[in-house]
Image (cartoon, rainbow, N blue to C red; front, side, top):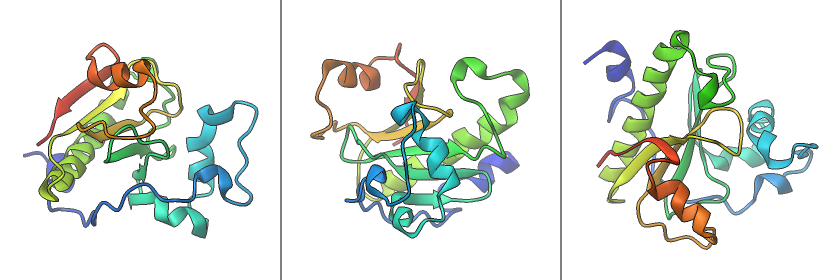
Length: 176
């Protein structure tokens, strides 16, 4: 096991218990304004305002490199988003990735697997991790999602297809 894998391995971080998506959507937080690009830029705003008291319930885990938040529009009972902090890895889309990003991606993957394994230990069942081949939001982020797809937010066929076909979600693999 490499140093990166051991740092972000099951049991090495106190992730806590999954509590579900917070009731206060990000867009309702006073002073949190969605700009002209709409939801595409919400993660950037989240990083800029992550110390806001109203956003603390939306954070599942954070350290100096990454932040894991509850998906505001979950497509399954358990749906988290893992994002690298811009100071650690400032990449907008998978197509922007280069060889020099490989170490950061290994760390991101190790943390995603550790969170997924932790969720599985909480009795959630099969968890998959992956990034969208063509994301609708920036910056680069990884989905950590249970396979029940039991959500009122799973409204359109494209939502189902994005998370269940290998062509839409890169490196989507079971972690349980």
